[in-house]
Amino acid sequence: MAAVESARGGAGRSGQAGSAGSGTARPELQGIGRSRFVVGMALAVVLPPAVEVLVTLAGYRNFAIIMLLHLAVAVAVAAIGGFWPAVVAAVLGTTLLNYFSADPVGTLSIADPSTLFTLLVFLAVACSVALAVGLATRRAQEAARSGAEATALSELALRILSSDGSLESFLEKVRSRLDVDAVTLVAGGPPGGRRVGPDRPAAGSGPDWGRGSITEWAVLASAGTSAPVTRAAADHAVVVDSRYTLLINGGPPAGQAFSGQHQRMLAAFGAFLVAILERRQLVASMQDNQRLSEGNKMRTSILRAVSHDLRTPLAGIKLAVSSLRQEDVRFSPEDERELLATIEDSADRLDHLIGNLLDMSRITADSVNPLLRGLGWAEVLPDALRGLPAARIRVEVPPNLPRVEADAGMLERVVANLVENALKYAPEADVVLTARAGEGIALAGRPASEFRVVDRGSGVAPAAVLDMFQPFQRLNDSQRTGGGRTVGIGLGLAVANGFTEAMGGTLAAEPTPGGGLTMVVTLPLWEGPLP
Image (cartoon, rainbow, N blue to C red; front, top):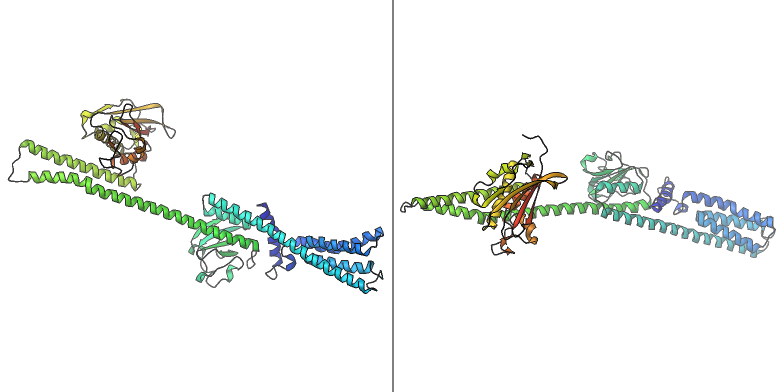
């Protein structure tokens, strides 16, 4: 991270400063910061005379060694300031060699042609070495910047993939990396799909680009300021593709380009941005598909229930009514009572099934709004057990239990469905209803109370317990578990579970000691005023 910031601060800003007049950086500043260029130029002026002063003070006048010293100065200057400072050092060194070391000493004239050739070769070698050293220095700096940039982008990609994928956090990373004031993402691009790159000012992208406010493009996210960047106030507009545009405040002045490094980072940011948006669209599409699948499953199950469970009681009612309407047949009072009882029983079954279907549709649509108040377990039992065989139900609920927080109608349906399920699958034994409250019973940190429906039936295999609470999970009579209990009962347990959760409670299944199944309803205690 620090390497990226350093490269951006040196090369990036230097490139921008050098392009203030012409729009492109001068060759001497490409890869070399302005400060290093200035230092190199100063050394090119100071070091060659310093070499001559030192050798003069030392009384050393070996022409070849002095020439090598000047070559070393040119190489050092090239490493620091680049090619042109090194050329200055080489020319100045050649001039000083001619004046102080070549005969005749003290003049710029050259008596020996071989000395002139030597000085020209020295100048050519010094310039060539300076060019090579400067080029190597620039390549090393570019490699360092590229490595730091790749590391930063790799780290950014990992953070994006492991983050929550929010656009705001991504844009904040973009803003901090580019060192700009604010970034806003809008849905839309320039007219006709023309791309406005980071090296091209938005104001010059077309006559229609600047019209209208940002709200016409649909703001997706913003970072750096509380209010989104408006089109009129944006310094730069970067179209990441034909669908999305980044409006940027800060960075280079409007009309000037981002540095090459920043342009590469903007391209990478654009790719990441499109990936994030497409991932969000994919997640939304998956959720929609899941909801559609669940809806199709629910509709298919309802059709099955209508085709089987609803038609069975209707067939019984129609048969009994048709029999009673036969004028040529006289039924005894006992037969009439039996046929009427069949009609009543089938109508009750039909009403119960339709009620469960309606309740399940409310639960699935998240339209269950419980009216919570303080209720005692015993208060809902008379209505919940109406129509059920009282001889097979034993109520052992203590009369002094604290009230629970519940909706009377929902709690009544929960108890009725649980008891009906127990009676259906434990036909040879009584069903026991108990309740308790006290230490050790809590729900989400609140004191709670338990209501238990205990049967001595065949029980349910542990692997099938979770399936019991799913709607329309009843299997055929031949598909049984363990000792013979059918897995699930259709809608009864699903409705009981949905209503219990809507009231803030839980519904669980436990094996009854000695065989059977115990359904446990846990609800928080009522903490409001008592009636």
